[in-house]
Figure 1: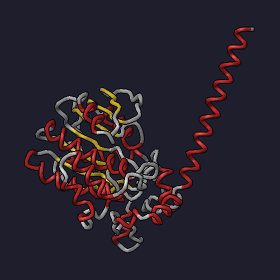
Figure 2 (figure 1 turned 90 degrees about the vertical axis):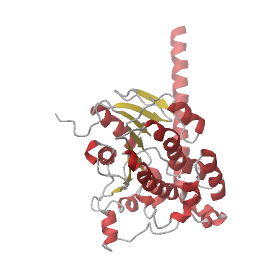
Figure 3 (figure 1 turned 180 degrees about the vertical axis):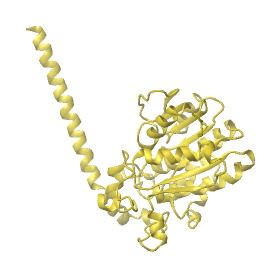
Figure 4 (figure 1 turned 90 degrees about the horizontal axis):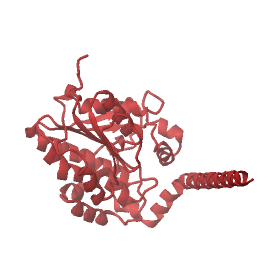
Length: 329
């Protein structure tokens, strides 16, 4: 069978490989005979990967350690990992979603990729209008080093600020960075694109559901599909973007949202994304309280999960004691 995708024996790096779109992408690359280096903060046993590397993308040192374990030549990079901001603060959300991707690209990909290389970041339809509101994240796009980007983050918000608004700002910044990078690396024949997924059934589904105001509101953002996408339905177009079949595609913010954007353009649906998201207004106390109130269902769910875990641990402990007593008898 003809290898149309062109991934056979290619060195591919995937972040966020333990779940959702990242895991689906990793498994498909393995089937296409790629040499896959899977990165995530939680290690999963994914059959066929060349190596799984634990990494905390909010830590420069952790990223540096991970990249030491990857070959000096990389053919394709899939920047899938991301945080919704519903359970993480502003700093961590923005760092994982934007700073880590830019740092990996500037520090490693530019030095390890050659003619024919490809980069694809998973951003979001929440990052639309990146060109219109570029002034909101200009300080991040101008920052060159990890330290400069962290300094810009300190100017943007306090560390304990909720991460909800960091999500769309980080995704817009990534879309903008992708476009600039595609032009920069074009002469080297290295392609750069971004996948902008619509609502998808991943491990963060509950977080996005709460942020949207309920499942009905979340599903309403799925265009004509009227259902959440599966991780595989996002992994397939992501694989295409980095494949040999997309050899003339670069600088593309590839929207995969089952026609939601088309409905907005045709005035068939209200446009909820055309707004500023980086305003310091969102850092004000009363706004933060409103956002925290909106996220309360997640706290209740977390408490319930912790109680379930405690009960499970107690039951295991009691069963262990019972077994010991039986042995003694």
